[in-house]
Length: 258
Image (cartoon, rainbow, N blue to C red):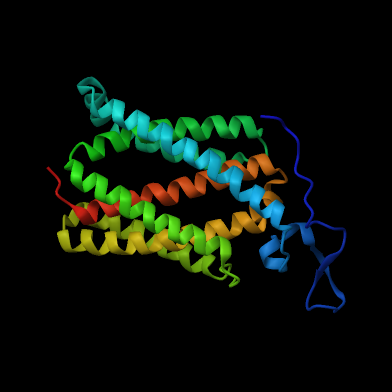
């Protein structure tokens, strides 16, 4: 992957105006805001390029995870490893995601992509362990349902004229609340709470899919990273997480754990 930097078409030397046609406000640069916040619409070809690259790497990550998960399910030693290392894998996966997100402006796009594939492979080990405790019919149904909802949300995010930018804060707070509820339920072991959390999780990550797709299409990630290649990796990671979480919450809903 080359290191050609994306020449941000949204950044200028001017400051952000308070209102259209009004004098600029001092001390606030355009580069600090995203295209969505500025109401800037990229050229359709550029928007398509943003989406195409992000989805390309996202699907590559999903294929890698699926391949690793299949290998884990078919090998008892790998299953034993996944079970014995579940907590360590979880910590490592969080660390990798934080490293990609936190260091994206300091590392190359190639390194970021490599970390993404390492993350996808490690998560494939975890997913292989999780799905091994469910009947195949439940896994297939969850996958098809997650695919349908992800696809519908992605299309909506790509074509809607309505700005979803205002949902960012709401979705973030909902995600925090969901994580807290999941942690609490570890101690409660409540099937009712599990069902409610799963429903909320499906709705939340469906909304996040539409939100993330619109941000990618608008060029927000490219503007933040200053590189189309880095933006593609970050976008792929976001979409990958949206789909994986949709699938796992759907799997909980379909149940049938062995």
